[in-house]
Image (cartoon, rainbow, N blue to C red; front, side, top):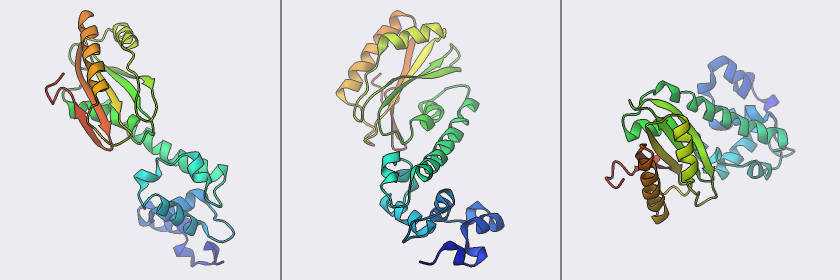
Length: 226
């Protein structure tokens, strides 16, 4: 097998990174830097290409791979699998750090931008609440429940309790659909009505219920059914 060390120096991923910058590298070359080496029959880039092939050459799909998914590849041990997962987690957290700049929530799109990074690419459902003051200023957001692949339960009592504790004047309910279907199910509609009624009793307004799915979203408020 011809290893990367046999290549011309300017063609090796690390040397190419240093000489030309990260933008000059292919996805496979960047992954090769993370995993550092291949296996007995493949060098690091060949192994990286194989991993990408199983993700349809799509990084969005690859970032959904679990530790167990990565360990199925010959040459990917615990260290290499964790390196890939850690790289995607760092990217996710960097996206999340942009959210605080959006202090005021004035539209469904604005609300989605403030919460989408934390829900992006999750393999399971999570329910979050955005808390706002009387001027629609963001005063906090918190995960309320975590569910399975197809559903999560909205705990209305916990949501109201947390909203009161934060002195929130209004709230926005948010959850994701890992299936990629942004449309609400019957249970989503029922839970929305129940939460709206409970919030009104405590002088708290439910401004919206957002469902995020594969880069798209559904807004109960925009659709006029809240």
